Length: 301
Image (cartoon, rainbow, N blue to C red; front, side):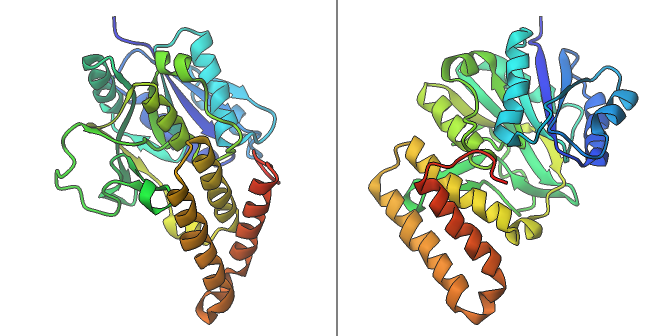
């Protein structure tokens, strides 16, 4: 019998994105998959709209914006409690290929040491251009998380099943036994770096992390808006430091992250006229350092 899979779609507003994602999931060829929408207190009537349009989809309302880690943990607990063999974290701003889950499960069944699997992810508005073919952690340069193949046209250069350091939480399939061994996402992250730390934890427990080239989806991401967001600057800066702490990164990695990257960036945003429009991001980075030093984690208002 084929493994049972729970696809967890976490959302906070963006009902039209969620509906498009669910419509693509309805076309999945894999028959042993159920869909769970975890709603983080959306203000756009997402739960009611989803239940009306997709009556077979289970909806859990968390009652608050728990963030990515805690919100997805609600879904992961549901998956374990209801006997699913795999759980898939899936962003609501994605659309999947009909055979995506079939390809992922086939790879997982061929090798029981694989704990986490991810698809190739393309930009939705550039459907042949890769956003991620799995992730690599550059420990020599501050523990930065880098996407393999980002912004390159897919010409088959990543068409071999590959071990990677992490799979982005945008689309991450995890085996039940891996969750049972290492635990859930660490909710101290709130959002960003939580799946990276989770994958490191799973890999260090002896599991493989892989990108499956035959599995595909398309992500409606805008990198330009992310680059300008003080909120994202805050979480990325604070959570990278938490990631380095939890993974016991070596001193050289810490020094590169704190001095060569963060501090240099902070001074550049402060002193160079061309970057003075980033004053809000500079303040966000300062708050990130302060909150890390004070052990203030999770979602911050």
